[in-house]
Image 1 (tube, rainbow, N blue to C red):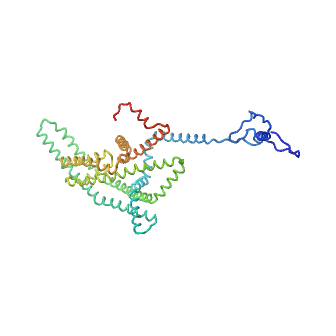
Image 2: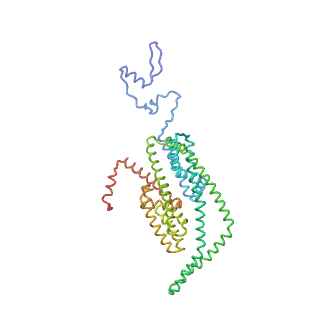
Length: 455
């Protein structure tokens, strides 16, 4: 440092070397080269040797390395949790089962609200058109409540009709079939005896022995069931009570979600806008819209398609005078919700039931189901569903197989839209990577041009 004296002979405060050089340049003086021993701090923009006495050196923060450390810690913790969950897979399954059981009313309530939302929106629009013609106005809350009320009156009315008229008829069909089993058993034994008479050289005992051994086991099972009837009734009663409570909670949760859907969506988008960079917001909106279209179009469309197939099956079986019409039609309609395998899964129980009654009726039923499923696959299904998922048959079979092995029948149904969404997201990510590397689709096509593939 150097000092200067003013015109009155007083000394001015010390001047830093940087400031002295600036003044020297302004006055035309020669500026000595900067000494190598005085490095410049990037953070403070001054020489390190310029600190005042008693001033401490501050720690220079680096947000980049801090972010890397945070991500590293999160990845380590996540890997530890996943490793622990895989090691104790039984405990993990039990824990996830408990959580799913507690949250089941909210999960099924959200699913019910999602499925009923198109109907609520339709009634909301119709009520708005009616009010417009009548020159009347309603508050948005009252308007929404009326649309939700109409929807649930229709749905609950349909369920009550099923419970009052359809379910008792199904139970009667089941009771009739159970009562028919002994006579069918005796008829089968008579047929085997007739075969023994006509063809003495055949070893019929190989067929009669399992049948004769089956009846005592069946009687023993029925006796044990009668002995344990009271505990079974208590367990079933508790299960029914728990099921009714969960059903009521599911309906209440779905009503609140339908009423507050705008607020819930706004909260969701607040989270998206708060945590996602602005450049990713348009792509996120497009992805969520397409995922919603894939899931809703398949679920709602498949439900309508299966209801029509079940109704057509009931009409055709009534015309053909086949027994157990309602029971078999419900089985066919419900299993038709499962893509590809559903029609076969529904046809097998119906064919076996009718086979006990009369083999000719079973043959008529199988031919009818084949015609009905051809109509569904070629005409009705494309009209209702269209290309809702855009998936190839191989991926649909994969989704049904994996979903069924993990979540049973529900997984076989929901596996297709879930895999369709995953396929869509993967396709977008691959396209993003190709665009980033500036690889056109033509280059991908050229890569397989020389392979022995059919056009």
